[in-house]
Length: 127
Image (spheres, rainbow, N blue to C red):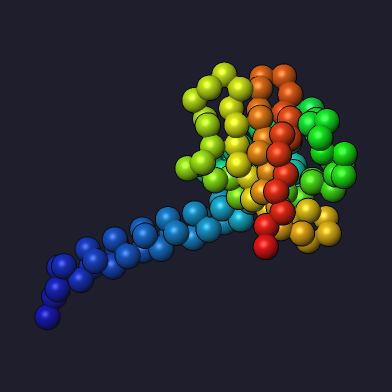
């Protein structure tokens, strides 16, 4: 009994097996290579905004003497940007960022991001 479709199916199966084997090896190589370079893949809007804010000189408004830039650094690494309350269409964009500072205090920052620098305007403590 000769099944012609069986041999075609096995040929196709072998091709997919080789393809996925090569894809797995290539993926491991690329991830290892890029991990050593310290590159960061920021494709989502939240990550892109935080990366843009980290790349600019950060200043605090004069009324925020109780805080330091170093204390707020974790918020610019792991914070969540509330785009529904942010103004992203003006020349100096204003972002609302929610996160925790170095003392694990939940805070809400209002950050104005212009082309040259970013300024923290308001800091509110959250419950």
